[in-house]
Length: 84
Image (cartoon, rainbow, N blue to C red):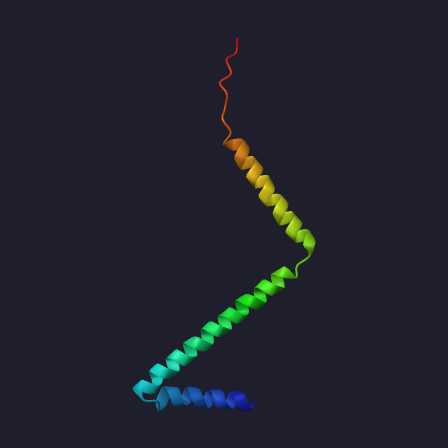
């Protein structure tokens, strides 16, 4: 609860009282906090994906190999067969 009140006080200070040069600094600090939060969220999401079951990785690998094989078959040279 204390941090919520502190955050509200900081927002009110930013909106009503902060001079122009302090607002620039606060914008920079807020953008750094936002970037750090996004990086943490991406890393935690990646770690969550790594904890998925191994069968999922096998299915993804088999789909990639199947796609690669079908693509190779599609781009193979075609022989001209003449029917007699």
